Image 1: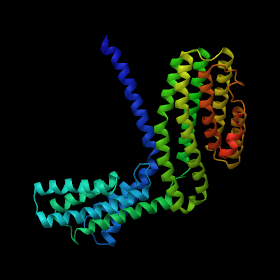
Image 2 (image 1 turned 90 degrees about the vertical axis):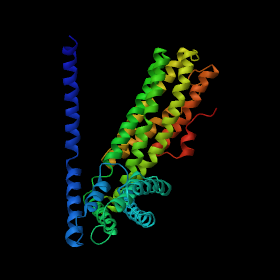
Image 3 (image 1 turned 180 degrees about the horizontal axis):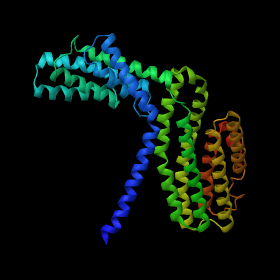
Image 4 (image 1 turned 30 degrees about the horizontal axis):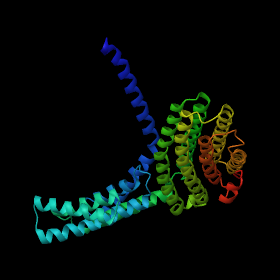
Length: 375
């Protein structure tokens, strides 16, 4: 009976994995084509134009520089070129002083890795420096000397940058998607807090805290995406006009991150307030309403920051500002029917969160604080 139960589950799992892989492959067709053309072109240039024999590093460095990573490509190109060159220098010097052999190769590799970590934190830089120093010790130098590998790495990096300049995808697409995902989760955090109040369930508030904590990797990932997108707007002529939008998204992300951090503090305090029955029925209803309205405003802000049309974007963001300001005007313990000190703390912790959200929508800090009722 157990195998019969397990087989449908296995088929379902395999079907899901196949579907996920198919979607991922379909979305990677254009980048894969770019990487293939770039690697072959870099190899052909190094071999037929520069006359290098088997210039594998021209192809591999272009693949590393393009890749599927969200890190800026220019940094990867520099890491590959510098790591390759320094690795050859270190390997040649240690080979001259210590001689060859497996034990020497181990010493060279160990020293090269530590040197790379001392000079830079980049994993690609460490890999290239260690690999090149090891190849210098273990393999004979290619025709033209060991530094032909370094030149091949530079060729691959240059071709990768050319592809980035001429065939880059819209640098706004991924940041918009990331921002939508982050703000959607943020809205759910506040709605879960509202639900916990309405149902008097501190566990639900704790679940909201867990959800808020899980947003941090999304924020960190978007920061990487924005760095890469900013690089594209700097080096790709077709997308330079979008630099201001990338800067606005970066500005908004910083304040969304602060608001999310405040939401974690708020959810933790809300858990305690529910456990200690610190809020009256009227205060519970009012604060839950504030949370729901804030979540609605966040949804409007998400629609604005992810909109492709400039007019729609400005209209949504303007509406979000108005909605957030309207909620902020109510954030006084007495106005929300709060009577006990612990309940007042809940409201006081929500006020800086609202200021962060208003700043994320483009309101200046002083103006944002001005919407809050005086205490």
